[in-house]
Image 1: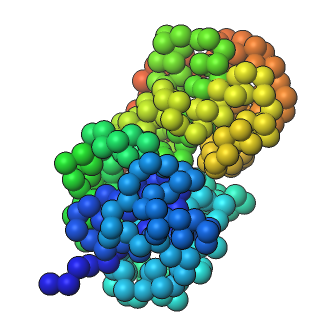
Image 2: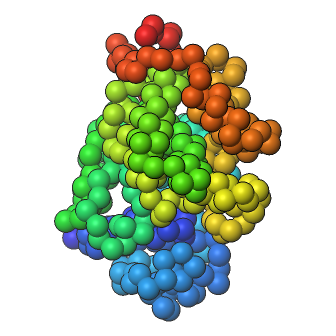
Length: 352
């Protein structure tokens, strides 16, 4: 039986480790990268020097700058590009997609202007495609070291879920499944906001009591927001919710945490992002979520507080004082929806 081909679109840190996991499981990988010079380096040096220097790439990974050639012949395509470029990339590859192609987004972000998640962008561009999303506490630097890691593949299609499990599971990468695609994807996007807050608090010298409170209340905000938009709030208690939230709010490997840390050191947002040198999705997500929360009347004190610091120039101390004297006092407010909705349409809010 000939070796099957899987495509990974996006030459960043996560796209790189994803390509290597797939190749290590015996599949040929077409690895598309926007940077043509980097393609040559990857194919000759067998590493991605820009994002993961020293991380040896499997011989079955072939980098290319030709997106249609990368997708053609691949029944499974992972899209691992920043949300700002996601729709453009999907449009470029759509003519190479067939009825048999499965598309899986790994991007944890929200499209500016439309408030669409990446699966919804794919659905708009490719209405008949079989779609899934991959999310979880998946720091690329740790995966590169083969640290034991869990992830979630979410899709309405059982075939997509099982195919991704087959392609990705290994002795160090465990794949779980979920059918709440919207909730899994939303959790991965929302947690980036709270990672910025956690980084800011860490830079100010706040301790583990503070971090614990932030993570717990962030989870409550995420579930509250998700429920109002139609996600099952119980999804946020899984790997793609609390799991991803814990790691991104606790590790300096998290790009969003590092942006927050720089802000806590007194740097401007522009300086923090420039220092990072990579995309931190939480910066864009914060704007989108604040606008949506205001529109729907959803109580989001932490996200609102960060927005005031970053975009309105309010003093951190003033925001902290307002948060600590806030009116909301209910500790636990989880309530599962009666039915899961995968489309992302707003559900009738339940009381809590």
